[in-house]
Structures are given as C-alpha cells and as structure tokens.
Image (cartoon, rainbow, N blue to C red; front, side, top):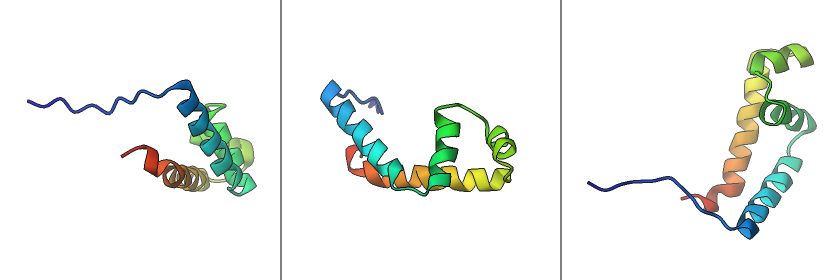
Length: 81
C-alpha cells in the first residue's frame, strides 16, 4: 500500500518567499477584505464575532474570507501541486 503524504518541507528562504507572496497578494485585495481576513486568521475571531464587530452579516464575512482564500490559492498555486 502506498503512503500518500501532504507534508511539505521548506527551507527558511522558501518560507520567506512564500510569506512575501502572501503579503503582496493580500495587499492587492480591497481594504475590507484584508481587514476581515486579518481578523479571521491573525486575531482568530469567529465569523460571528467579526460580523458583530463590523456590523455586517456573517454571510458577508464568509464572502470576504472566501475571496481572500481564493486569491491566495491562485497566488500560491504553483507552489503546491
């Protein structure tokens, strides 16, 4: 039986390059999308907490997070088969 693994090993230089791609990619998004993505992934707020804090619907939060993740997948696509 074959062992399929999704484990990746990157050098520090590669990790720095990936971080640079992520930073540049996120900076190209609309300000509101950046803010919501930051609250979700860096501040670790739930979608409901973000919605309450920004006085928007949870669906709007989900839309912005999906938009940011899609943008990042496109930017990083060639790094992850």
